[in-house]
Image (cartoon, rainbow, N blue to C red):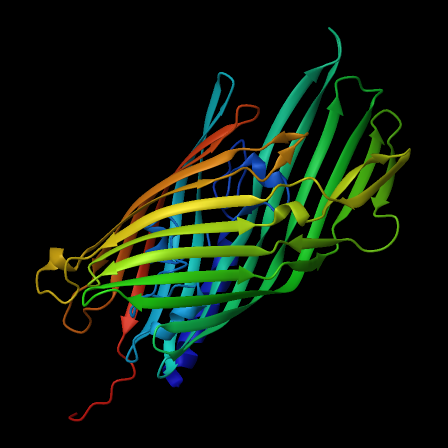
Length: 442
């Protein structure tokens, strides 16, 4: 129990360090934060990859994934399979380089960020528990556009955004019958974002118009999971995984402040929105299904499908409707997002004395449909691929911990808007300690 409490405190300190890390990233033209994407100015920002280190090596595959030495938070039902003698702690960071392309212009931006800190252990036979902290969304961009009104005048628009939402969760997974497991994650969402759009005119007599958007979130999150495993032969088994994330209002009190300032008269006129009532942000209902074939624990091949019901989500938007200007909730700004993932993990023999036989080789590919609607046009499609390795750490006192390294390519492809190519390196350490063994001889 003392070790569990100690690890919980360590996990908490890692979470606090992660939150501080998100505000000290390298700055580039397109942003500074754990993301550098101008697409993070829409919705809740760029959605974070919430998978652990093993799933990251398979490009986020995990709905039907269940292993005795891995904490798979993508489906809480998998906690029931955690080894009875282990306490598993998984912490990871990443560094990325993003290339932006718009017309004939290109630009590179770099960033680094904390990715996850999760832990898991068994409470009782067929009953496992996990806790952790993950990024839910990130906002980070900083760019300008210039327009000419005539030959002698024009204006420049400055776009800037920072912040993000974090998630801390506590989950349990139970296997009441052989081959049947279910689980639940109860999470807490917190964080904030600040966005601004500032128009500056070349003529000093023209007013500068500034719009500042902000929100602060404190809410809950619920995710449920089910895994059904059938043995096909002595060496083969197939697992079906199902997940559901509850969609609901998360508050945030999003607000908009519009300031019109005249440089010549030094007169500023400020209007705050919404004029009455409180607006709320929202997370969507999410559904997932996965299938994984496992051959002797050596070869695993799986496929996942995820559906996020963003089309039903209301977002606040500043504008004029029927002659009335306000900051109000609107639907039709997003589309349902579908994601398809294929992945594999190969480990010749995790108990072998030969080091190479214990190495885990992972790979995965994904495709996600656009879910942003920008000025009536579809946002970018997403293509991604990952290759990764799980390298055993073997020494005199521990031979079960793993160094997980993966390289990922993500392409946000749009003919109407900016195209992004991101190359990311994920590095994570999975500590696997035998804490619950009872020694007969000391």
